[in-house]
Each structure stands twice: as C-alpha cells, then as structure tokens.
Amino acid sequence: MNSIRYKSLEFFIIFILVPVSFALNFSPWIKLVIGGIGFLYVVYVLLKVENEKLKIAPNLNWKLFWKETFVKGVVIVILTTLFVWITDKETLFNVLLNKPKLWVFILFLYSLFSVYPQELIFRTFYFKRYHNLFKNKGFLVFLNAIVFALGHLFFKNSLVIILTFLGGLLFAFTYNKTQSTLLVSIEHAIYGCWLFTVGMGVMLGFPT
Image 1 (cartoon, rainbow, N blue to C red):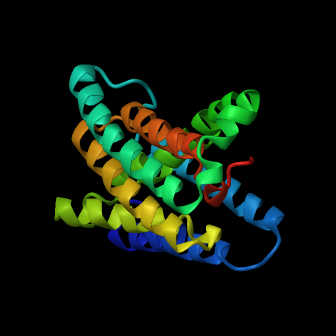
Image 2 (cartoon, rainbow, N blue to C red):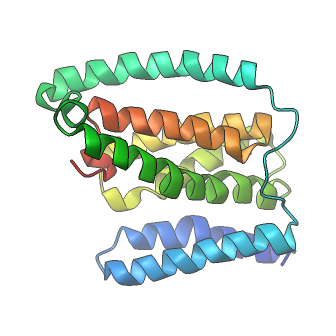
Image 3 (cartoon, rainbow, N blue to C red):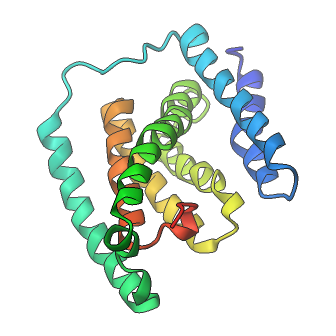
C-alpha cells in the first residue's frame, strides 16, 4: 500500500475519479455509500498504514494561529459582505436574523460532521500519503487546492469552485505549516460558518 504505483492509483480514485463522478446524476444513496466507504478507507490507512495518531498535536503556537486567522478572517468578512450586499442584498444575514436557532444548529452540525472529516481527508490524509509523490512543496499545496475544489464539483456552481480553491489554498498552507488537523479544522469552520452567516449558504448546500 506504500508503493508509488499504489499511491498514484489511490490518489486518482479518491481525489479525481470519485469527486468527478459525484457531479454526475445518479442515486444520492449510492454516492453516500461510496463516500462512506471512502472515508472509512481513509481513516483505516491513516491509523493502520501511516500510524497516524488522531490527537491534539503538542506545542501548538495558538497565539500566532489566532493572529493569522483573524487577519485573514477580516479580509474574508469585508469581501464577502460586500459581495452579498451587491449581488443579493435580501440574503445578507438572513438566517441569523430570522432563524437564529437554525443558524446555531447548522453551525454546530457543519463544524463537527462536515469540517473535521473534510480536513482528515483533504489535509491530514493527503499530506501524509502524497508528500513523497510530489517533492515540490509549493506544487503539493497548489494541487491540494485543486482537488479540494474538485471535491465540490457536485454543487455545479463556478463560484463555489473558485471559493473552495481559494479556501483550499488557505487550509493547505495552514496544515503544511502547522501539521495540525485541529488548527486547520478550526480555521475551516470559522470561514465556512461565516459564509453561511453572511448569506452565501445556499450555494454551499446549507439549509435556509
């Protein structure tokens, strides 16, 4: 399972073939089964093949992390607020203002059951398995953003692809720098929850 040929085929299936196939019209139940099997495979490989310990990494630089996340967050808040204000003013903070209980409930579910699994697959698994396939660190990060965007093809929305590519770059840089699934999951949750809050949730599959 650690040969270059095996890893190359594994990469193609998990990060290219499956995401592209999910953009096709077939039973969502079949997609759910494929996704579930894929996630279990990823966890198995991390724990049994790569001997990854899914625990909080020691010596995390929390101060630097929060500082960088805040700065990036301010930029995201300004740009996305202006975008929603210009393109669809009626949706600006719509869920937060009109359905605050739904807003809190969705943020909790999203952070726990969507963000963390995504980061296990697209960051922890990806960087652990394929760092030796792509020697150039910059290319490894860039490719991670591409496959993260491909993972959202099923939304069939060009803006979602652009946003997830940019988000993929941010998250890949964070993980490559910190090697922490926890930190990149927190960052991912903050930015994703903000997009839902500001009024961009519909295109990302959030209920409204």
